[in-house]
Length: 221
Image (cartoon, rainbow, N blue to C red; front, side):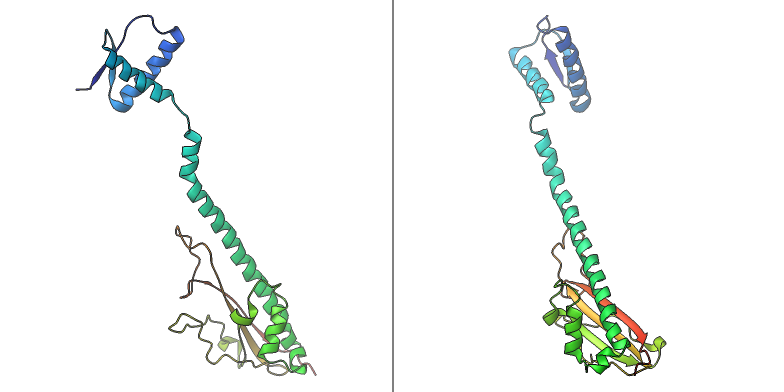
């Protein structure tokens, strides 16, 4: 049986107020199962009825409550978009820098200037606009290959401590007509790693940015 709340009778409300009151009471009946009947009621019942009616009309602070509900996911998505954009931008910058620097090997300029791995890294770092920590984070592997089909373009392996295993990495620029493979790796630090938006793919919790290019040296003299 539904609970009954008795409403006072009489002409104490105007026509507009009666209409609004009927709408509110109908909503209360649907939501809470409280049924109002027009008959003489006690002061306590009238007070309860008026309290419920006032509660239904109140909307103070609604905007603040709604903002508090959406603010956390909103900013999480916003920062995730910004971080994702930075990752793609950094990857593109690295890709362009590796291709441009590798041309020094392909055209024989690096061989003629007696480049080693440190010099190659210096040339590479000059093309990334200070976006990377080249001295400590950039890992380079340059080596010749007997054929394009056997060129090693794979991602690196990791040590037990989570760092890239650069054992065997070297610098072999080759000579005219040689096939050369250049691999450059960098672990990009991440800021946002919550709400299922984690971009990390390394044991150290960073994002691996890698550019690999294989080419045949020109017949330079």
